[in-house]
Amino acid sequence: MTEALDLLGLNYLLTPQSRIYWLYLLSSALIAAVFLHVRPQYRIGVSRAIWLHPSAKLDYMYFVLISLIKAALIAPLMLSASDVALWVNGALGYREPLHLGHTLIVALYTLSLFVVSDFTRYWLHRWLHSVPFLWRLHRVHHSAEVLNPLTFYRVHPIENILFGLRYALSAGVVTGVFITLFGARIGVAEFLGANALVALFNLAGANLRHSHLPLRFGDTLEHWFISPYMHQLHHAIGTTYTNYGGALSVWDRLFGTLHVSPVRPLEFGANVRHDTLAALFFEPFTLEKKDEQNPIIA
Amino acid sequence: MKSIFGSMALLLMLGGCMGDNAYDGENGLIGTPGTTVTLEGALASISSEVLHQDALALRSSAETLGMAIETAELSALREAWRDMARAWKRVEALYVADDLSQTMIDIPANVDAFHIGNTDLHAKLDRIFAQSGDLAIALFQNNTKSINALEYTLFNDGNLTERERGAAAVMLAHLQSNYAQIEQFYVQNGLSGGEEGVGVLINQLIDSAYKLKEWRIGEAAGLVVKYKDNPDAAHFEYAVSQSSLLAMRAVLEAHQAVMSSGLSQIAASASAAPQAEAITTAITGALSMIDAFDAPIENDATDTRIKALYAQINLLQTNYTALIAALNYTQKIIEADGD
View 1 (cartoon, each protein chain N blue to C red):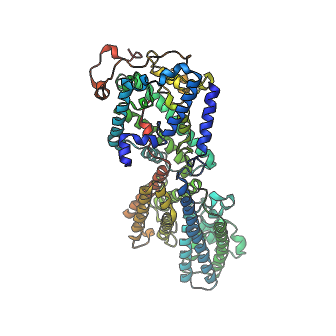
View 2: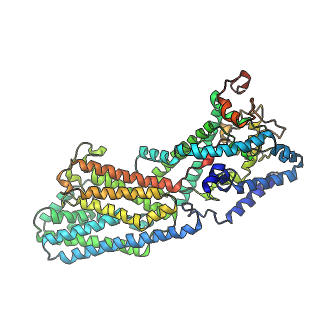
View 3: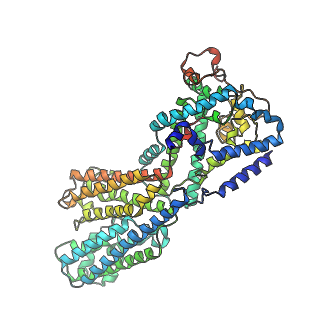
């Protein structure tokens, strides 16, 4: 039964580590309801035209198929963060653990995992846009003409592997260093069964990043965090080469890719269309036309 | 809009905190409230069945030696010392009291002089035995009253002079005082605090495995950087009494006892049963290797089996580290997704 859920991707709804865990969807829905109450002019963003748009239907079908592929083919082959952690720990060698309070160790480890992971996510995401072949893979995600929470999973399998490697390396290195420094006294602060910071990020409307509701956090918070609207700007034609950040906008600010603007109408999509499942999987390997290049490198 | 968003986020956070899955700072390792009892129960079991029982056995072994110290034959004293050394190695291997209380930090150094300082303990003891002054004053330093000093006193030659017998009594009284403190401590204190308690225990096991590998095997066999290709049997822990294998066996048996008394159970409840099984297998393998020695290990520090034993203990240490990683980690499929 569990395996069947895994294969169909339905386990994502029940897994707190998943972006579309039911509670995160519920929190996003509540935030959306409040937002629409205050800004009713954006109700078009949750209309049937959006949910039943051909691009959205393609997202739904792709989600089931890519879930099956990830569970059956990708996950079993992925490098594990534990293996990386053991390698790092072995390379650093044994030393007697430092004596710090357990709560402080847990706080430092949880924060380090979150920040390092967000940092590597920024750079991989940026390279997915700036390296021509990687962009061909990544525009599978950007070719979505309408956005919905499942667009998050509209990612080419090779990109899944890259993100999985990124996670294994970043989390593995952090864990290896922390095991070397503190031994077995490390631990993750959990909330709802996930890394507390990741859970809070997801509860704070992460599913609205891929939506048509231009929710902003306000200038002060957007100095530090990527709001749903900032990610929508990243999906918008013309500003795709900005706001690569996951949760934190710090990296965009540091590396010159931050784009904050008042809410304006946005048009989503890439310089290529993917109308079928086959196109999503195989188009990246077809010959490229000149006008399909990423504007950032064209 | 900002205030609306802030209020909503706060409400959701508070709502989440009321759930059964709320993080309370201690139970992240296990995750579900039902197994938290098992975690505390397993730690209590390790504390009472292993830590306290080993401390009791150590105290008892010292009392046995104490009853014989004034009159018994040297051979009987030697046997009693070996029993006490075996008991001490078990206690030392699992010595978490220093992590639980600042007052217990100095005890191991009071008892055991192995790998502490650069003074030539044997020469110092020879000088004391050659003198005629008050032994209680002459043996004022902790290392001259350590279990290693007592070993030298009983095993340095085939005789036990009256002065050496008197010195042995002073040394034993010192050791008994420290053993009593350990035993009393474990009566009143034990591992607890969920994840924190497990962390303390595993850290001690890793430390013990590391020192067994590097100090008790690698240095004597010339397998570590410090003594690379320079094997010297005199560097074995109990080279004088040729009891080093006994000590190694005791350390591993202590590890085995912890695994069977609760740590394997803790690991299994946190989906780390394979890692616990690998640890148990590594311990069993190392014990078999020790049993395969049919002569004291001090007879030949270049024996190729020592290198294999070193590698086996290294595997044990790695397996403990793998257990830490497994207890703290699962691969999250969300992290394979983009954005």
